[in-house]
Image (cartoon, rainbow, N blue to C red; front, side, top):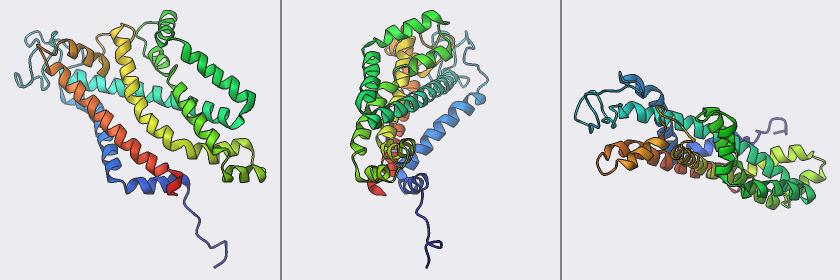
Length: 290
């Protein structure tokens, strides 16, 4: 058999996909995430109520009291089933977009800083240190002062403004360890350009820790949004998100516990599925398994 006819080794993504398919727990978590996302999109269509509709005949009604409101109603008579799924949709969109932006910036920043080393690394990481030293709330207040309060694009920028800093530090540490490995030295000796080394060797080998950390960023963004909503800087009424629904439900926990149950349960399912999927992705992209 000649070299031309020899089978080629599977690429990184194909190899990782095959390994992920053999992880039933990770596939189950992925299916749960897909089901939650589909429910947030199609679920409200099964109810005649809008997220801001008021039913004055059923104020603060628990589930099971009336067939018109499956999850009950809040103090204003708004349907909690629709508001919870609408809030889930908004929280998922905001957190996923903010996480994607912060991961992309952090991955590029950390990989370049770690591989370049020397003064470039020093200056780039000093920028990270300066941004870390600024109070997060201070940045958000500046953004909401310059732009409209409650604006979703402004909230997205506020969530992603500092989310990339930890990612950059993680990637830089991994890159510093990788660039002294034999395959990186061999690529340098063969004259491979630095950009190719970063994209073909460094980034694929740091994806494991980054993807695991990504499973923590999404719920972290949801918690950030909840904190901003508590201060009146996040999602504004009558719009709903998991963050402000949980906050309102916690205030009514003693007299109306059902207001907290649905959004809290969805958040728990999101956390669980994201962590299980993150473990599966870490194993799939682990270079020691290839």
